[in-house]
Amino acid sequence: MRKWILFIAGLAAGCDARFVDYRPASERSLPAESSPPDLAGVDLSGVDLSSAEKPLAEGTFVGRAGHAGTGTATLVQRLDGGFEVRFGSDFSVSNVPGPAVFLTSRMDMGASIDTQADINLGTLAHFNGAQTYSVPSASVPGRRNVFVFCQPFRVEVSKAALIDSK
Amino acid sequence: MSPAMKLLQRTIFAVAVLILSLLPQAAEAGPWTRDRGSAFISLSYGRIATSRLFGTDFSIQPLGATYVQQAVQLYGEVGLVDRWLTATFESQIFRHNQLIDQGATYGLGDMRLGFWSGLITQPVRLTAAFLMGIPTGDSAPSAGQGADPEAQLIARSLPTGDGEADFELRASFGYSFGHARRWPLEHYLVLEAGYWFRTQGRSRDLQNNLIFLEFSDAFTYRAELGTKLPWRFINRFWFVIRMAGVESFASSIQASYTCAAGLGNGVTYNAYGFEVAARIYKGFGANIGLDSAFRARCVAAGSNLKAGLTVEF
Image (cartoon, rainbow over all chains, first blue to last red; front, side, top):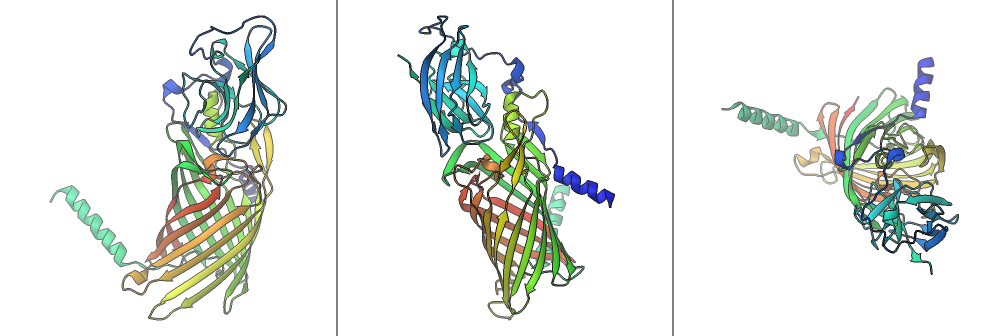
C-alpha cells in the first residue's frame, strides 16, 4: 500500500524533462551573468552622450501575428551615459514561451534573427508591467524598433516603433 | 544468392505472411465496456512535424523554426465489473519535442485515468465516463544549471506536460450494425460529448519562480464511424473515419500561447482523422492513422501520423 502511495505521489509531482542542445557550439552564448555586451555595428555618430538622463525616443507596443501587445517603450540615456529601454507600467504582452527583447533597425523581424541588425537585450523579464533593459551604447544609433520575439519559434509577438523625442 | 538478397526475400515473405494473416481488429471504443478480466492494450507512436502554427486568432502562422513532436503512447482498458466498470489508462510514456537545429526536450508526458460505466446496453450503448488528468509531464523544462539564456528559452518552450490536474465527464453513445455477408458487413458508430473541468497548471515564470496558470474549461466531442468493406481480403480491415475536437472556453486574450506544444490554456482543435486497423494473429493487432486539424488555436498546424500495436485478451 505504501509503495502505491509513493508511486502516485511521485506521478503527481511530475517528472522533469531532459534537454538536449542541438545548436552548433559556435552559436551558443555564455550564461547571462557573463554575457558581454553586443557591440555589433559600432557607430556612435549622432548619439548624445551628455550627462543628463533623458528620453531619446518613445513608442507604443502593438501586437503582431495575432498576439496582444500594449504599453509604452522608451529609449533612455541614463545619468551615467549608458542606455536602456524602459517598458512602462502599462506594458502587457501575450504569454508566449521563449520571449526575448530585441532592439533592431529592421521594420519587421519576420521569422529570423539578423545578428547584424538585431540586438538581443535579453529574456523578457515579465509579461506585464514596468521593466528595464540595458542597451549597449554602440547599438543605439539607427535602431528604433523594439520587439518582443518568441526566440525559439522565431515569431514576432509585439513591436514598438520608437520615435525620436524632440 | 547473396546474403542481402536472402534477407530481402525473407523480409518480403514475412510481410506477405503478416498481411495474409490479417483479420479484422476491433478499434478502441468508449461505449463498449469490457467484461470483467478482459483487457485491451495499445502501444502507439505518433509524429507531428511542422513549420506552421494555429495562432490565438485561429489563423495559421508561419514559424521561423521547424517543430517536431514524437510520442509513444500507452493505452489500456480493463474490465473490472461486467458492464458497470471499465478502467482506462492513457499515458505518453515518452514524449520528445524538438526544434530543429536548436534543441529538444524529452521525458514522460501527461497521464489520464478513466472509469467507464455502461448505462444502456440494448439496443444502443450509452456509457458515462469520469476521466482524470494527472500532470506527470514537465510544464517548464530547464536546460540545466549553467546553460545560456537562449538554451533556457528553448527548453522552456518545449514542455512535455501542462502541469495541471483536471477531470472530465463524458457521455459516449455507440451503435453497431450490419453483421451480414453483404454490404454493410459490419459498422459501428460512436458519438461522444464531454465537459472538461480544468484547474490551475503548475509552471514556472521567466525568473524560474513557481507559478500557477489558470486553465479554462472546455467542451470535447468525438464522432467516429468504423466499417469493414465488402470486398475479399479488404473485409479483413476496419476502416475508421472520425472527427474529434476540444473547444476551450478561454478567450483569445486568455489563451496562452504555448507555441506548437499544444499544452497551454485555450487549446482548441477540430480535427478529422482516418485509421486502418487489423488483427495480425489471435489477440494481436496493428493500426495506422492520420489526424489533421482544420480549425484550431494554439496547436501545431501539422498532421499527426500514428502507428500502433494492440493486444486484446
